[in-house]
Image 1 (cartoon, each protein chain N blue to C red):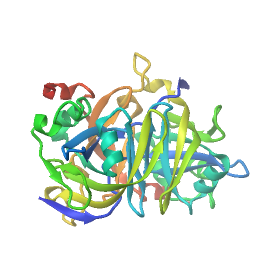
Image 2 (cartoon, rainbow over the protein chains, first blue to last red):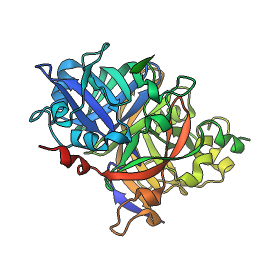
Image 3 (cartoon, rainbow over the protein chains, first blue to last red):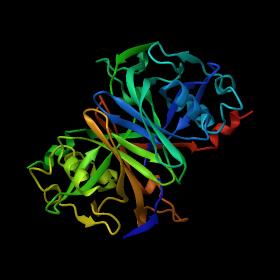
Length: 190
Length: 190
């Protein structure tokens, strides 16, 4: 039996994306975003949604570029802080002690200490309501060498990403492996 | 030290969304989607991206409505199957033995056995390339009673959702709790 909760933004889990932008004075800023996801394979694109009230919104409108740095569970505290403070008031890199690196392909900074980075130029903007969705074409992906497996591919076990759950408001690590995609379901294919 | 992987659609983790639609003959169909995410809080919206070649694409264009059913880890095999087979060729509900339920708020079916369901009308479409992004306004959320905590809120531990990782192509359960959002980062706030 299901209970109706009404119209709410709920999905389990959501990602923890750290969106990096420069402001007008070229000050690097980062913001934690749970409303986002990959949205196209070719060209590869990722969507991130931010409120117009955020400092990141103005930067995205101005620079038309951003990065997404994905933290490992070693940096839950810093990632959460990036969703609490505003770049309008503080230098979040300075406060957190993490290191901004200027992307070599787009006009935006990423977090040196975070193992997986997408570098994006804005190709589509949708004003949806409280949030505006910015779709970025991913021009490059950079991964920490220590997080690549023997075949040179990103590994969930080595990247140690984490996710978040709305309403419950909880960060979770990845847990047990449950099987390979496009594989475990073949048992059902007629 | 980071290695450049070039432009690729990589994010860790991605969701496992089961997108439910009706075809022209009112046959219920479901498709597994990893490219998606919540994209607005007010009105609550969720984005899902599908290729034009899929059966779901035609249904979305025609009906302008869909559901997102989120499976628990009891149904990894069925969810994976929903990403392998096409509704053009088979009745995926019949093959999997799962039960279609017609939404009472939108013109689309959801999966009775899956614990968390979003019911959506299409409000924005973006042709991004290989994938088309459909943004749905969430008109209702339905949750299995057994997955609500003592305060009537969805619980990750009870919902037991799972996620997927691209390239690695692996399903993962949720793991350890790492702390509360908008909380663990306060230690850094000046």
